[in-house]
Image 1 (cartoon, rainbow, N blue to C red):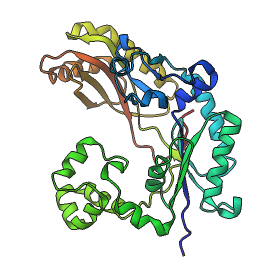
Image 2 (image 1 turned 30 degrees about the vertical axis):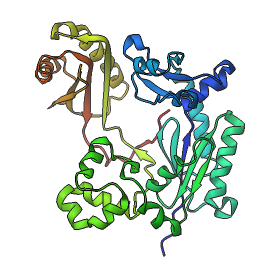
Image 3 (image 1 turned 120 degrees about the vertical axis):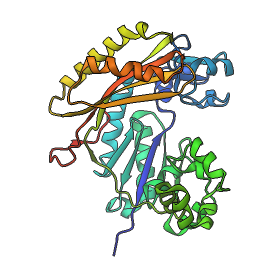
Length: 354
């Protein structure tokens, strides 16, 4: 008989902003955001709840955020500080389980299915983890506890900040039936609009539509949607990984209107990527790619098979990508490499973001 899975999703509350408020008491009662400068076309990484009251959210342009809240204090952020605290967070997780899948610096899945702590209660384990985080790090976290990753991630967002939601196996069916499709991780705005054309807005709608119709109209996505609408997610935690690609990019303070003006940026990115690749010479390159984001925010990528980092090839790919902008300037330039599939290697890297 298969064991009852117990998955916890821990999600720190406005992590970067919370760290800044913890370290500087003067920031605790005002709207703040961590992000790039509006003068350099930056975006918001995260913000506190005072700022969210003005409609500000992550990935929003800093300039627009300041229009919504002129007295918003924008902090450039201290990534080394956040990484250091994230390591402490990881060490706390390891006291409760060794099955950990980090998703970012501030969130992770924990599998406690076989844990004997607190008599095997995932609810009490999650509560203990959150209390330890608050006591030792001075930060708050929210948690979702459910039979699988999909449901645990949704539950962790239900009682934010500093709360948790437990979903027992007996409650799954009724909970999922009422769930809006935009709550499913990976179902973005474009997919939601596509689904709405078929009158599909909730998991209950998807169930009624039927798996055969879903596969006919949406292919592989339809199968996944049906499984999620039934509360099914058999994915195990990914505790090991092998890097599949490496890339660097630069957002310009002002749109680049001609290819010649981007030459220096391309050279600088090439040098940066070369230095990063030198730190891991064991990986074999499969292809090179160049990425452009145009002034209308459309993004295009051109990729070619090649077994080494090659400036000449990137210079050949650049005008191909540029032509897709129909005369528009570019706001972002990126280059990268994809590696050969080495999943068969025995020495896989430990999944970590530190």
